[in-house]
Image 1 (cartoon, one colour):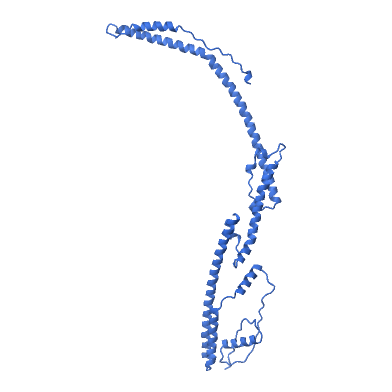
Image 2 (image 1 turned 180 degrees about the horizontal axis):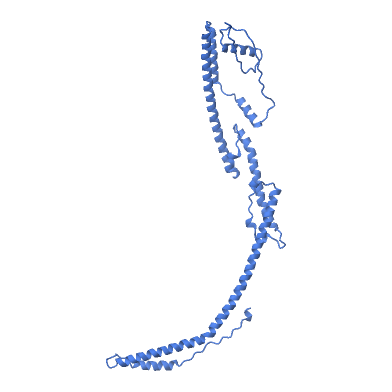
Length: 352
């Protein structure tokens, strides 16, 4: 294009008899290069008026000649600016088309990337909760081939990100599966659930394990405190029941007019021994371990069966029910009945 531009320029030539005018004007001004007096003031004013008119004439001629000489330059400048504007308009039109093409290509790339990502999520059975792979940054011009297909490099990038989602899902599922075992192994009666660990479930392994250990330790301590309070409560209730039983036994003996002091002392001692055994008894460790094992396994080969029998015995009407119960249980245990749990005595009133 630059070879087609041909410009013929002739510098403007403006000629004036400047030296002659300068010499004449300087000579005229010499007349008044003296102090103005009363005799010369009138002529001085007249010359000043004449010089002003001369100045206007010179300035007007200057402007007219400059304007005439500048006209070709102005026309040239306007024409060249028009050509510049035409080039800029053509350039912008091309850029707009390029932008439109690139936008359409990126949109196509995003569409193909989205479809491929869903396909890979489905293939790997990634659940909605773990579908986190972002692909917007992959929607670039090179992501689409000339035939409009998804480029191999873009596919590899999507594969890597979807596999990261799959790994996160597998790790999370493994953590939740181990959570119950870790809880029971630590001694918790009720295993932790996802709600306990959800706030740090997706953290790196070392962070997750540290937080889990902290929660398990806290839960074990809380459970031990609750169990201790429950044991203390049961002991208090049992002691109170034993003391009540002592009083009832003594009262029954007095009501029937027991004169056998040894029998009354035996009844009192029986209740006292029961209260003492309740206070001192600690849970059997093997029973506790067996209970926890049963909870962790969640299944058993046996069930508990309760058998109720009635025995009719002839006893001294003055004998307290607790003494009768104790002696009956002793006889049953001596006969080999070791699974006897409880005995209730219902003594009928003697006929009047």
